[in-house]
Image 1: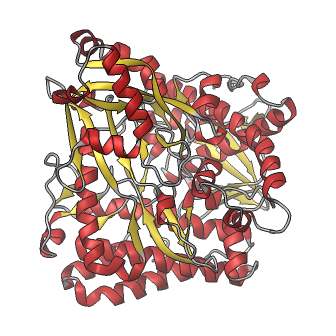
Image 2 (image 1 turned 30 degrees about the vertical axis):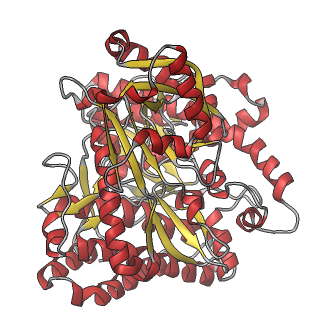
Length: 616
Protein backbone atom coordinates (compact mmCIF):
# COMPACT_ATOMS: atom_id res chain seq x y z
CA UNK A 1 0.00 0.00 0.00
CA UNK A 2 1.46 3.39 -1.01
CA UNK A 3 1.37 6.25 1.47
CA UNK A 4 -1.89 8.21 1.31
CA UNK A 5 -1.14 11.39 -0.67
CA UNK A 6 -1.82 14.89 0.61
CA UNK A 7 -3.74 17.00 -1.94
CA UNK A 8 -2.37 20.30 -3.14
CA UNK A 9 -3.87 23.39 -1.54
CA UNK A 10 -5.20 26.30 -3.60
CA UNK A 11 -3.72 29.75 -3.37
CA UNK A 12 -5.19 30.55 0.05
CA UNK A 13 -4.22 34.22 0.04
CA UNK A 14 -6.68 34.93 -2.76
CA UNK A 15 -9.63 34.73 -0.35
CA UNK A 16 -10.30 35.28 3.34
CA UNK A 17 -8.15 32.85 5.37
CA UNK A 18 -10.89 31.78 7.80
CA UNK A 19 -13.40 31.20 5.01
CA UNK A 20 -10.79 29.22 3.10
CA UNK A 21 -10.04 26.95 6.05
CA UNK A 22 -13.74 26.20 6.56
CA UNK A 23 -14.15 25.65 2.83
CA UNK A 24 -11.16 23.29 2.79
CA UNK A 25 -12.85 21.01 5.32
CA UNK A 26 -16.18 21.06 3.49
CA UNK A 27 -14.58 20.51 0.07
CA UNK A 28 -12.68 17.45 1.33
CA UNK A 29 -15.97 15.92 2.48
CA UNK A 30 -17.69 16.68 -0.83
CA UNK A 31 -14.84 15.22 -2.86
CA UNK A 32 -14.65 12.10 -0.69
CA UNK A 33 -18.41 11.53 -0.81
CA UNK A 34 -18.70 11.83 -4.59
CA UNK A 35 -15.72 9.57 -5.24
CA UNK A 36 -16.97 6.94 -2.79
CA UNK A 37 -20.41 7.17 -4.42
CA UNK A 38 -18.88 6.57 -7.86
CA UNK A 39 -16.86 3.59 -6.60
CA UNK A 40 -19.98 1.87 -5.26
CA UNK A 41 -22.31 2.99 -8.06
CA UNK A 42 -19.93 1.72 -10.75
CA UNK A 43 -19.33 -1.57 -8.90
CA UNK A 44 -15.63 -0.83 -8.38
CA UNK A 45 -16.42 -1.48 -4.71
CA UNK A 46 -18.92 -4.22 -3.89
CA UNK A 47 -21.70 -2.93 -1.65
CA UNK A 48 -22.81 -6.52 -1.02
CA UNK A 49 -19.60 -7.08 0.94
CA UNK A 50 -20.29 -4.27 3.42
CA UNK A 51 -20.59 -5.43 7.02
CA UNK A 52 -22.66 -2.97 9.05
CA UNK A 53 -22.75 -2.77 12.82
CA UNK A 54 -24.74 0.15 14.18
CA UNK A 55 -23.43 3.38 12.64
CA UNK A 56 -20.23 1.72 11.41
CA UNK A 57 -19.61 -0.26 8.22
CA UNK A 58 -16.62 -2.39 7.27
CA UNK A 59 -15.55 -3.23 3.72
CA UNK A 60 -12.86 -5.92 3.24
CA UNK A 61 -10.38 -5.15 0.44
CA UNK A 62 -9.32 -8.67 -0.48
CA UNK A 63 -6.74 -7.66 -3.10
CA UNK A 64 -4.59 -5.80 -0.58
CA UNK A 65 -5.64 -7.56 2.63
CA UNK A 66 -6.90 -4.40 4.27
CA UNK A 67 -10.25 -3.04 5.44
CA UNK A 68 -12.07 0.28 5.01
CA UNK A 69 -14.24 1.50 7.87
CA UNK A 70 -17.01 4.05 7.36
CA UNK A 71 -18.93 5.95 10.01
CA UNK A 72 -22.46 6.97 9.02
CA UNK A 73 -22.49 5.40 5.54
CA UNK A 74 -25.77 4.74 3.74
CA UNK A 75 -26.36 3.73 0.12
CA UNK A 76 -29.64 4.37 -1.65
CA UNK A 77 -31.67 2.90 -4.51
CA UNK A 78 -29.73 4.63 -7.29
CA UNK A 79 -26.31 4.12 -5.71
CA UNK A 80 -26.47 7.49 -3.99
CA UNK A 81 -24.07 7.69 -1.08
CA UNK A 82 -24.55 9.52 2.23
CA UNK A 83 -21.54 9.80 4.51
CA UNK A 84 -21.98 11.63 7.81
CA UNK A 85 -18.81 10.48 9.56
CA UNK A 86 -15.20 9.56 8.97
CA UNK A 87 -13.44 7.00 6.77
CA UNK A 88 -10.41 4.98 7.91
CA UNK A 89 -8.16 2.41 6.28
CA UNK A 90 -6.90 -0.54 8.28
CA UNK A 91 -3.88 -2.17 6.61
CA UNK A 92 -3.28 -5.68 7.90
CA UNK A 93 -1.00 -5.55 10.90
CA UNK A 94 -0.61 -1.75 10.83
CA UNK A 95 -2.19 1.23 12.56
CA UNK A 96 -5.37 2.65 10.98
CA UNK A 97 -4.97 5.64 8.69
CA UNK A 98 -7.57 8.40 8.28
CA UNK A 99 -8.94 8.83 4.75
CA UNK A 100 -9.92 12.49 4.41
CA UNK A 101 -10.09 13.15 0.67
CA UNK A 102 -10.71 11.46 -2.66
CA UNK A 103 -7.10 10.87 -3.69
CA UNK A 104 -6.43 9.13 -0.37
CA UNK A 105 -9.43 6.85 -0.94
CA UNK A 106 -8.20 5.91 -4.42
CA UNK A 107 -4.78 5.08 -3.02
CA UNK A 108 -6.46 2.59 -0.68
CA UNK A 109 -8.42 0.80 -3.42
CA UNK A 110 -5.92 1.20 -6.30
CA UNK A 111 -5.37 -2.56 -6.87
CA UNK A 112 -9.12 -2.98 -7.49
CA UNK A 113 -9.32 -0.29 -10.20
CA UNK A 114 -9.15 -0.72 -13.98
CA UNK A 115 -6.56 1.07 -16.11
CA UNK A 116 -2.83 1.54 -15.72
CA UNK A 117 -0.80 3.20 -13.03
CA UNK A 118 -0.41 6.38 -15.07
CA UNK A 119 -4.20 6.54 -15.55
CA UNK A 120 -4.68 6.46 -11.79
CA UNK A 121 -2.08 9.18 -11.28
CA UNK A 122 -3.79 11.34 -13.90
CA UNK A 123 -7.13 10.84 -12.15
CA UNK A 124 -5.57 11.74 -8.79
CA UNK A 125 -4.28 14.95 -10.37
CA UNK A 126 -7.79 15.75 -11.68
CA UNK A 127 -9.34 15.05 -8.27
CA UNK A 128 -6.80 17.29 -6.52
CA UNK A 129 -7.48 20.04 -9.04
CA UNK A 130 -11.23 19.68 -8.50
CA UNK A 131 -10.75 19.84 -4.73
CA UNK A 132 -8.60 22.97 -4.89
CA UNK A 133 -11.14 24.72 -7.13
CA UNK A 134 -14.02 23.70 -4.88
CA UNK A 135 -12.22 25.28 -1.92
CA UNK A 136 -12.06 28.57 -3.82
CA UNK A 137 -15.76 28.28 -4.69
CA UNK A 138 -16.96 27.49 -1.16
CA UNK A 139 -14.82 30.19 0.44
CA UNK A 140 -16.13 32.82 -1.99
CA UNK A 141 -19.75 31.76 -1.40
CA UNK A 142 -19.54 32.65 2.30
CA UNK A 143 -18.82 36.28 1.52
CA UNK A 144 -21.24 36.29 -1.41
CA UNK A 145 -24.05 34.93 0.80
CA UNK A 146 -23.46 37.76 3.28
CA UNK A 147 -23.72 40.25 0.44
CA UNK A 148 -26.97 38.73 -0.85
CA UNK A 149 -28.51 38.79 2.63
CA UNK A 150 -27.56 42.44 3.02
CA UNK A 151 -28.92 43.33 -0.43
CA UNK A 152 -32.13 41.27 -0.50
CA UNK A 153 -32.91 40.21 3.08
CA UNK A 154 -35.55 41.82 5.22
CA UNK A 155 -39.13 41.73 4.00
CA UNK A 156 -39.00 38.23 2.49
CA UNK A 157 -38.08 35.08 4.38
CA UNK A 158 -37.15 33.28 1.15
CA UNK A 159 -34.30 34.11 -1.20
CA UNK A 160 -36.15 33.17 -4.40
CA UNK A 161 -39.16 35.30 -3.45
CA UNK A 162 -36.93 38.24 -2.51
CA UNK A 163 -35.02 37.95 -5.78
CA UNK A 164 -38.22 37.74 -7.82
CA UNK A 165 -39.59 40.92 -6.24
CA UNK A 166 -36.35 42.89 -6.16
CA UNK A 167 -36.33 44.01 -9.77
CA UNK A 168 -32.94 42.40 -10.36
CA UNK A 169 -31.85 42.83 -13.99
CA UNK A 170 -31.34 39.10 -14.60
CA UNK A 171 -32.42 36.86 -11.70
CA UNK A 172 -32.08 33.67 -13.75
CA UNK A 173 -28.41 34.47 -14.37
CA UNK A 174 -27.77 35.19 -10.69
CA UNK A 175 -29.37 31.86 -9.80
CA UNK A 176 -27.26 30.08 -12.42
CA UNK A 177 -24.06 31.48 -10.98
CA UNK A 178 -25.16 30.82 -7.39
CA UNK A 179 -26.12 27.27 -8.35
CA UNK A 180 -22.79 26.36 -9.97
CA UNK A 181 -21.85 23.55 -7.60
CA UNK A 182 -20.85 20.85 -10.08
CA UNK A 183 -22.39 17.68 -11.56
CA UNK A 184 -23.98 15.51 -8.82
CA UNK A 185 -22.41 12.29 -10.17
CA UNK A 186 -18.94 13.48 -11.24
CA UNK A 187 -16.03 12.80 -8.86
CA UNK A 188 -14.11 15.50 -10.77
CA UNK A 189 -16.98 17.97 -10.54
CA UNK A 190 -14.76 21.09 -10.28
CA UNK A 191 -11.80 20.08 -12.42
CA UNK A 192 -10.45 22.91 -14.58
CA UNK A 193 -7.12 21.64 -15.85
CA UNK A 194 -4.88 24.25 -17.42
CA UNK A 195 -6.04 27.21 -15.30
CA UNK A 196 -4.18 28.81 -12.42
CA UNK A 197 -6.11 29.72 -9.27
CA UNK A 198 -6.16 33.36 -10.44
CA UNK A 199 -7.63 32.28 -13.80
CA UNK A 200 -10.25 30.09 -12.11
CA UNK A 201 -11.39 33.12 -10.10
CA UNK A 202 -11.33 35.38 -13.17
CA UNK A 203 -13.25 33.09 -15.54
CA UNK A 204 -15.60 30.80 -13.59
CA UNK A 205 -19.32 31.57 -13.08
CA UNK A 206 -19.28 30.85 -9.35
CA UNK A 207 -17.16 34.01 -8.86
CA UNK A 208 -19.43 36.33 -10.89
CA UNK A 209 -16.63 37.61 -13.12
CA UNK A 210 -16.92 40.10 -15.94
CA UNK A 211 -15.07 38.83 -19.00
CA UNK A 212 -13.79 40.89 -21.90
CA UNK A 213 -14.76 38.84 -24.95
CA UNK A 214 -12.56 39.80 -27.94
CA UNK A 215 -14.10 40.13 -31.40
CA UNK A 216 -12.00 38.53 -34.13
CA UNK A 217 -12.68 38.63 -37.86
CA UNK A 218 -12.84 35.53 -40.01
CA UNK A 219 -12.93 35.68 -43.79
CA UNK A 220 -16.52 35.16 -44.91
CA UNK A 221 -15.66 32.33 -47.29
CA UNK A 222 -13.78 30.45 -44.55
CA UNK A 223 -16.81 30.02 -42.26
CA UNK A 224 -20.14 28.24 -42.43
CA UNK A 225 -23.21 29.80 -40.83
CA UNK A 226 -26.52 28.07 -40.06
CA UNK A 227 -29.78 29.78 -39.10
CA UNK A 228 -32.81 28.26 -37.37
CA UNK A 229 -34.97 30.52 -39.54
CA UNK A 230 -33.39 29.20 -42.75
CA UNK A 231 -31.15 31.52 -44.74
CA UNK A 232 -29.81 34.67 -43.14
CA UNK A 233 -27.21 37.42 -43.24
CA UNK A 234 -24.95 36.73 -40.27
CA UNK A 235 -23.16 40.08 -40.25
CA UNK A 236 -26.49 41.94 -40.33
CA UNK A 237 -27.89 39.69 -37.59
CA UNK A 238 -24.87 40.39 -35.39
CA UNK A 239 -25.07 44.15 -36.01
CA UNK A 240 -28.75 44.14 -35.10
CA UNK A 241 -28.13 42.47 -31.72
CA UNK A 242 -24.76 44.05 -30.90
CA UNK A 243 -24.72 47.42 -32.74
CA UNK A 244 -21.99 49.14 -30.71
CA UNK A 245 -19.65 46.16 -30.90
CA UNK A 246 -20.31 45.79 -34.63
CA UNK A 247 -19.43 49.44 -35.23
CA UNK A 248 -16.14 49.12 -33.33
CA UNK A 249 -15.39 45.93 -35.23
CA UNK A 250 -16.01 47.60 -38.61
CA UNK A 251 -13.88 50.59 -37.60
CA UNK A 252 -11.00 48.29 -36.66
CA UNK A 253 -11.20 46.59 -40.05
CA UNK A 254 -11.25 49.96 -41.81
CA UNK A 255 -8.07 50.99 -40.00
CA UNK A 256 -6.44 47.87 -41.46
CA UNK A 257 -7.69 48.77 -44.95
CA UNK A 258 -10.16 45.86 -45.01
CA UNK A 259 -13.75 45.82 -46.29
CA UNK A 260 -16.17 44.69 -43.58
CA UNK A 261 -18.22 42.89 -46.25
CA UNK A 262 -15.35 40.39 -46.71
CA UNK A 263 -15.35 39.36 -43.05
CA UNK A 264 -17.57 37.97 -40.31
CA UNK A 265 -17.40 38.98 -36.62
CA UNK A 266 -16.36 36.11 -34.37
CA UNK A 267 -16.42 36.45 -30.55
CA UNK A 268 -13.73 34.41 -28.78
CA UNK A 269 -13.55 33.27 -25.19
CA UNK A 270 -10.74 35.32 -23.57
CA UNK A 271 -8.83 32.16 -22.59
CA UNK A 272 -9.12 30.87 -26.15
CA UNK A 273 -7.97 34.19 -27.61
CA UNK A 274 -4.89 34.33 -25.37
CA UNK A 275 -3.77 30.74 -25.13
CA UNK A 276 -5.15 28.71 -28.05
CA UNK A 277 -5.99 30.64 -31.21
CA UNK A 278 -2.57 32.25 -31.83
CA UNK A 279 -0.94 28.82 -31.67
CA UNK A 280 -3.52 26.46 -33.16
CA UNK A 281 -4.53 28.82 -35.98
CA UNK A 282 -1.16 30.44 -36.64
CA UNK A 283 -1.35 29.44 -40.33
CA UNK A 284 -4.75 31.09 -40.81
CA UNK A 285 -3.51 34.24 -39.11
CA UNK A 286 -0.38 34.28 -41.26
CA UNK A 287 -2.41 33.74 -44.46
CA UNK A 288 -4.77 36.59 -43.57
CA UNK A 289 -7.88 34.43 -43.12
CA UNK A 290 -8.23 35.24 -39.42
CA UNK A 291 -7.65 38.64 -37.82
CA UNK A 292 -7.17 39.13 -34.09
CA UNK A 293 -8.20 42.75 -33.63
CA UNK A 294 -6.79 44.91 -30.86
CA UNK A 295 -9.18 46.54 -28.41
CA UNK A 296 -12.42 45.28 -29.95
CA UNK A 297 -14.77 43.22 -27.83
CA UNK A 298 -17.75 43.10 -25.54
CA UNK A 299 -18.23 42.52 -21.81
CA UNK A 300 -19.96 39.34 -20.68
CA UNK A 301 -20.35 37.03 -17.69
CA UNK A 302 -20.54 33.22 -17.66
CA UNK A 303 -23.62 31.12 -16.97
CA UNK A 304 -23.63 27.82 -15.09
CA UNK A 305 -21.83 26.56 -18.18
CA UNK A 306 -18.28 27.96 -18.07
CA UNK A 307 -18.13 28.48 -21.85
CA UNK A 308 -21.57 30.07 -22.33
CA UNK A 309 -21.58 33.77 -21.54
CA UNK A 310 -24.21 36.51 -21.29
CA UNK A 311 -23.30 39.84 -22.94
CA UNK A 312 -23.38 42.56 -20.25
CA UNK A 313 -25.43 40.20 -18.06
CA UNK A 314 -28.41 41.16 -20.22
CA UNK A 315 -31.87 39.60 -19.73
CA UNK A 316 -32.56 39.96 -23.45
CA UNK A 317 -29.40 39.57 -25.55
CA UNK A 318 -28.46 36.15 -26.98
CA UNK A 319 -26.07 33.98 -25.00
CA UNK A 320 -22.75 33.11 -26.65
CA UNK A 321 -21.61 29.48 -26.47
CA UNK A 322 -17.86 29.69 -27.07
CA UNK A 323 -15.19 27.00 -27.44
CA UNK A 324 -12.77 26.66 -24.53
CA UNK A 325 -9.93 24.22 -25.18
CA UNK A 326 -9.75 23.17 -21.53
CA UNK A 327 -10.64 19.95 -19.77
CA UNK A 328 -13.55 21.05 -17.59
CA UNK A 329 -15.04 18.29 -15.41
CA UNK A 330 -14.07 15.49 -17.78
CA UNK A 331 -13.91 16.67 -21.42
CA UNK A 332 -12.71 19.59 -23.50
CA UNK A 333 -15.51 22.15 -23.75
CA UNK A 334 -15.22 23.19 -27.38
CA UNK A 335 -18.10 23.81 -29.81
CA UNK A 336 -18.26 21.21 -32.55
CA UNK A 337 -19.21 22.01 -36.13
CA UNK A 338 -22.02 19.50 -35.60
CA UNK A 339 -23.45 21.64 -32.79
CA UNK A 340 -23.31 24.85 -34.82
CA UNK A 341 -25.22 23.19 -37.66
CA UNK A 342 -27.58 20.92 -35.75
CA UNK A 343 -28.47 23.42 -33.00
CA UNK A 344 -30.37 25.68 -35.42
CA UNK A 345 -31.78 22.70 -37.36
CA UNK A 346 -33.07 21.07 -34.17
CA UNK A 347 -34.48 24.41 -33.03
CA UNK A 348 -36.48 24.62 -36.25
CA UNK A 349 -37.80 21.07 -35.78
CA UNK A 350 -38.68 21.59 -32.12
CA UNK A 351 -40.41 24.89 -32.84
CA UNK A 352 -42.63 23.16 -35.38
CA UNK A 353 -43.48 20.38 -32.91
CA UNK A 354 -44.23 22.81 -30.09
CA UNK A 355 -46.53 24.79 -32.36
CA UNK A 356 -48.29 21.63 -33.49
CA UNK A 357 -48.68 20.35 -29.92
CA UNK A 358 -49.26 23.68 -28.18
CA UNK A 359 -46.23 22.89 -26.04
CA UNK A 360 -47.81 19.62 -24.85
CA UNK A 361 -50.38 21.47 -22.83
CA UNK A 362 -47.99 24.32 -22.19
CA UNK A 363 -45.58 22.10 -20.22
CA UNK A 364 -42.62 22.38 -22.63
CA UNK A 365 -40.72 25.25 -24.20
CA UNK A 366 -37.17 25.58 -25.49
CA UNK A 367 -34.26 27.98 -25.38
CA UNK A 368 -33.69 28.42 -29.10
CA UNK A 369 -30.30 28.00 -30.76
CA UNK A 370 -30.76 30.49 -33.54
CA UNK A 371 -27.38 30.91 -35.25
CA UNK A 372 -24.25 28.80 -35.49
CA UNK A 373 -20.89 29.52 -37.12
CA UNK A 374 -17.79 27.38 -37.49
CA UNK A 375 -14.49 27.58 -39.31
CA UNK A 376 -14.25 25.50 -42.48
CA UNK A 377 -11.04 23.54 -42.05
CA UNK A 378 -9.36 22.93 -45.44
CA UNK A 379 -8.79 19.29 -44.48
CA UNK A 380 -12.38 18.93 -43.24
CA UNK A 381 -10.96 18.33 -39.76
CA UNK A 382 -13.84 18.82 -37.32
CA UNK A 383 -11.51 18.16 -34.38
CA UNK A 384 -9.63 21.29 -35.34
CA UNK A 385 -12.62 23.39 -36.41
CA UNK A 386 -14.36 22.88 -33.04
CA UNK A 387 -11.81 25.23 -31.46
CA UNK A 388 -12.99 28.12 -33.69
CA UNK A 389 -16.79 28.31 -33.64
CA UNK A 390 -19.76 29.90 -31.89
CA UNK A 391 -23.40 29.10 -31.19
CA UNK A 392 -25.87 31.87 -30.35
CA UNK A 393 -28.61 30.83 -27.93
CA UNK A 394 -31.73 32.74 -26.87
CA UNK A 395 -31.89 34.31 -23.43
CA UNK A 396 -33.99 32.32 -20.90
CA UNK A 397 -35.11 35.52 -19.18
CA UNK A 398 -36.89 36.47 -22.40
CA UNK A 399 -39.46 33.80 -21.41
CA UNK A 400 -40.24 35.51 -18.11
CA UNK A 401 -43.31 37.66 -17.62
CA UNK A 402 -45.42 38.87 -14.72
CA UNK A 403 -46.85 35.41 -14.24
CA UNK A 404 -43.84 33.21 -14.93
CA UNK A 405 -40.34 33.11 -13.53
CA UNK A 406 -37.51 30.80 -14.74
CA UNK A 407 -35.36 29.02 -12.14
CA UNK A 408 -32.43 26.85 -13.26
CA UNK A 409 -33.01 23.37 -11.87
CA UNK A 410 -29.36 23.11 -10.82
CA UNK A 411 -29.85 26.06 -8.47
CA UNK A 412 -32.52 24.15 -6.52
CA UNK A 413 -29.74 21.96 -5.12
CA UNK A 414 -27.71 24.90 -3.83
CA UNK A 415 -28.24 26.17 -0.31
CA UNK A 416 -30.22 29.37 0.20
CA UNK A 417 -28.01 32.31 1.21
CA UNK A 418 -30.82 33.19 3.64
CA UNK A 419 -31.39 29.91 5.48
CA UNK A 420 -28.58 27.59 4.39
CA UNK A 421 -31.18 24.97 3.35
CA UNK A 422 -31.57 23.77 -0.27
CA UNK A 423 -33.36 26.30 -2.46
CA UNK A 424 -35.82 23.58 -3.44
CA UNK A 425 -37.22 23.79 0.09
CA UNK A 426 -38.11 27.43 -0.56
CA UNK A 427 -40.32 26.39 -3.48
CA UNK A 428 -41.90 23.73 -1.28
CA UNK A 429 -42.62 26.30 1.44
CA UNK A 430 -43.91 28.95 -0.97
CA UNK A 431 -46.16 26.61 -2.95
CA UNK A 432 -47.32 23.99 -0.42
CA UNK A 433 -45.99 24.67 3.07
CA UNK A 434 -42.61 23.92 4.62
CA UNK A 435 -43.20 20.33 5.72
CA UNK A 436 -42.85 16.78 4.45
CA UNK A 437 -46.34 16.65 2.93
CA UNK A 438 -45.58 19.89 1.12
CA UNK A 439 -42.35 18.39 -0.23
CA UNK A 440 -44.20 15.38 -1.63
CA UNK A 441 -46.84 17.65 -3.16
CA UNK A 442 -44.23 19.92 -4.75
CA UNK A 443 -42.30 16.96 -6.14
CA UNK A 444 -45.49 15.54 -7.64
CA UNK A 445 -46.23 18.81 -9.44
CA UNK A 446 -42.61 19.16 -10.61
CA UNK A 447 -42.45 15.55 -11.84
CA UNK A 448 -45.82 15.82 -13.60
CA UNK A 449 -44.67 18.95 -15.45
CA UNK A 450 -41.32 17.50 -16.49
CA UNK A 451 -42.63 14.07 -17.50
CA UNK A 452 -45.62 15.43 -19.43
CA UNK A 453 -43.21 17.61 -21.40
CA UNK A 454 -40.39 15.16 -21.97
CA UNK A 455 -42.16 11.79 -22.16
CA UNK A 456 -44.56 13.31 -24.69
CA UNK A 457 -41.66 14.48 -26.85
CA UNK A 458 -39.97 11.10 -26.44
CA UNK A 459 -42.88 8.71 -26.98
CA UNK A 460 -44.69 10.63 -29.72
CA UNK A 461 -41.70 12.08 -31.61
CA UNK A 462 -38.71 10.02 -30.44
CA UNK A 463 -36.90 13.06 -28.99
CA UNK A 464 -34.80 12.63 -25.83
CA UNK A 465 -33.69 15.94 -24.36
CA UNK A 466 -30.53 16.09 -22.29
CA UNK A 467 -32.58 17.86 -19.62
CA UNK A 468 -30.37 17.36 -16.58
CA UNK A 469 -30.01 20.01 -13.88
CA UNK A 470 -27.79 22.40 -15.85
CA UNK A 471 -29.84 22.20 -19.05
CA UNK A 472 -33.27 22.75 -17.49
CA UNK A 473 -35.23 25.69 -16.16
CA UNK A 474 -38.45 25.19 -14.26
CA UNK A 475 -40.97 27.95 -14.92
CA UNK A 476 -42.87 28.98 -11.80
CA UNK A 477 -46.30 30.59 -11.74
CA UNK A 478 -47.45 33.35 -9.37
CA UNK A 479 -47.85 30.81 -6.58
CA UNK A 480 -44.37 29.34 -7.13
CA UNK A 481 -45.77 26.10 -8.54
CA UNK A 482 -43.87 24.51 -11.46
CA UNK A 483 -45.87 24.81 -14.68
CA UNK A 484 -43.39 24.40 -17.53
CA UNK A 485 -39.99 22.92 -18.36
CA UNK A 486 -37.72 25.20 -20.36
CA UNK A 487 -35.09 23.00 -22.06
CA UNK A 488 -31.79 24.21 -23.46
CA UNK A 489 -28.63 22.84 -25.08
CA UNK A 490 -29.30 20.50 -27.97
CA UNK A 491 -25.68 19.40 -28.42
CA UNK A 492 -26.37 15.85 -27.24
CA UNK A 493 -30.12 15.66 -27.82
CA UNK A 494 -30.94 12.32 -29.42
CA UNK A 495 -33.78 11.33 -31.71
CA UNK A 496 -35.26 7.94 -32.55
CA UNK A 497 -35.54 8.20 -36.34
CA UNK A 498 -38.37 5.68 -36.94
CA UNK A 499 -40.61 7.40 -34.37
CA UNK A 500 -39.92 10.86 -35.81
CA UNK A 501 -40.68 9.62 -39.31
CA UNK A 502 -43.88 7.96 -38.08
CA UNK A 503 -44.94 11.41 -36.87
CA UNK A 504 -44.45 12.70 -40.42
CA UNK A 505 -41.27 14.67 -39.67
CA UNK A 506 -37.60 14.38 -40.57
CA UNK A 507 -34.29 15.93 -39.57
CA UNK A 508 -31.26 16.19 -41.81
CA UNK A 509 -28.40 14.90 -39.64
CA UNK A 510 -24.99 16.56 -39.80
CA UNK A 511 -23.40 13.16 -40.32
CA UNK A 512 -24.61 9.56 -40.11
CA UNK A 513 -24.38 8.20 -36.58
CA UNK A 514 -25.04 11.55 -34.89
CA UNK A 515 -28.27 12.91 -33.37
CA UNK A 516 -30.68 10.59 -35.24
CA UNK A 517 -30.59 6.88 -34.40
CA UNK A 518 -32.46 3.89 -35.80
CA UNK A 519 -31.88 1.98 -32.56
CA UNK A 520 -33.96 3.07 -29.58
CA UNK A 521 -31.41 2.19 -26.86
CA UNK A 522 -29.01 5.16 -27.15
CA UNK A 523 -31.99 7.53 -27.27
CA UNK A 524 -33.64 5.96 -24.23
CA UNK A 525 -30.32 5.98 -22.34
CA UNK A 526 -30.14 9.75 -22.77
CA UNK A 527 -33.63 10.21 -21.33
CA UNK A 528 -32.94 7.85 -18.43
CA UNK A 529 -29.61 9.33 -17.41
CA UNK A 530 -30.30 13.03 -17.89
CA UNK A 531 -33.96 13.29 -16.91
CA UNK A 532 -34.90 10.37 -14.67
CA UNK A 533 -31.60 10.01 -12.81
CA UNK A 534 -29.74 13.32 -12.76
CA UNK A 535 -32.86 15.50 -12.60
CA UNK A 536 -35.95 13.85 -11.08
CA UNK A 537 -34.31 11.14 -8.95
CA UNK A 538 -31.78 13.58 -7.52
CA UNK A 539 -34.57 16.03 -6.69
CA UNK A 540 -36.52 13.25 -4.96
CA UNK A 541 -33.49 12.37 -2.84
CA UNK A 542 -32.78 16.01 -2.02
CA UNK A 543 -36.31 16.58 -0.73
CA UNK A 544 -36.45 13.30 1.16
CA UNK A 545 -33.27 14.14 3.06
CA UNK A 546 -34.11 17.83 3.53
CA UNK A 547 -37.39 16.90 5.24
CA UNK A 548 -36.28 13.66 6.90
CA UNK A 549 -39.08 11.88 5.05
CA UNK A 550 -38.79 8.25 3.85
CA UNK A 551 -37.59 8.11 0.25
CA UNK A 552 -40.25 5.63 -0.84
CA UNK A 553 -42.90 8.37 -0.72
CA UNK A 554 -41.07 10.21 -3.51
CA UNK A 555 -40.33 7.05 -5.53
CA UNK A 556 -44.03 6.15 -5.30
CA UNK A 557 -44.97 9.61 -6.62
CA UNK A 558 -42.50 9.30 -9.50
CA UNK A 559 -43.80 5.88 -10.49
CA UNK A 560 -47.47 6.92 -10.31
CA UNK A 561 -46.75 10.03 -12.33
CA UNK A 562 -44.96 8.04 -15.03
CA UNK A 563 -47.84 5.57 -15.11
CA UNK A 564 -50.30 8.43 -15.54
CA UNK A 565 -48.34 10.08 -18.34
CA UNK A 566 -47.93 6.75 -20.15
CA UNK A 567 -51.69 6.21 -19.87
CA UNK A 568 -52.41 9.70 -21.21
CA UNK A 569 -50.21 9.08 -24.25
CA UNK A 570 -51.20 5.50 -25.07
CA UNK A 571 -53.60 6.39 -27.87
CA UNK A 572 -50.89 8.43 -29.61
CA UNK A 573 -48.09 5.86 -29.56
CA UNK A 574 -47.67 2.64 -31.55
CA UNK A 575 -48.71 -0.15 -29.16
CA UNK A 576 -45.47 -2.11 -29.46
CA UNK A 577 -43.38 0.99 -28.75
CA UNK A 578 -45.62 2.02 -25.87
CA UNK A 579 -45.31 -1.39 -24.20
CA UNK A 580 -41.54 -1.65 -24.78
CA UNK A 581 -40.81 1.82 -23.41
CA UNK A 582 -43.05 1.35 -20.40
CA UNK A 583 -41.25 -1.89 -19.54
CA UNK A 584 -37.84 -0.28 -20.05
CA UNK A 585 -38.60 2.72 -17.86
CA UNK A 586 -40.69 1.11 -15.13
CA UNK A 587 -39.52 -2.50 -14.88
CA UNK A 588 -36.11 -3.22 -16.42
CA UNK A 589 -32.70 -2.25 -15.01
CA UNK A 590 -31.56 1.25 -15.83
CA UNK A 591 -28.25 2.21 -17.43
CA UNK A 592 -25.90 4.16 -15.17
CA UNK A 593 -23.21 6.34 -16.69
CA UNK A 594 -19.79 5.42 -15.27
CA UNK A 595 -17.89 8.68 -14.89
CA UNK A 596 -15.05 7.27 -12.79
CA UNK A 597 -14.41 4.44 -15.24
CA UNK A 598 -14.42 6.97 -18.09
CA UNK A 599 -11.71 8.97 -16.34
CA UNK A 600 -9.68 5.85 -15.52
CA UNK A 601 -9.89 4.84 -19.18
CA UNK A 602 -9.26 8.45 -20.30
CA UNK A 603 -12.21 8.45 -22.69
CA UNK A 604 -14.97 10.96 -23.41
CA UNK A 605 -17.12 8.20 -24.93
CA UNK A 606 -19.99 7.15 -22.69
CA UNK A 607 -19.34 4.10 -20.52
CA UNK A 608 -22.47 2.60 -18.98
CA UNK A 609 -23.10 0.07 -16.27
CA UNK A 610 -26.51 -0.89 -14.95
CA UNK A 611 -28.46 -0.37 -11.74
CA UNK A 612 -31.66 -1.89 -10.38
CA UNK A 613 -34.68 0.11 -11.45
CA UNK A 614 -35.69 2.23 -8.42
CA UNK A 615 -39.31 2.24 -9.65
CA UNK A 616 -39.63 -1.51 -10.22
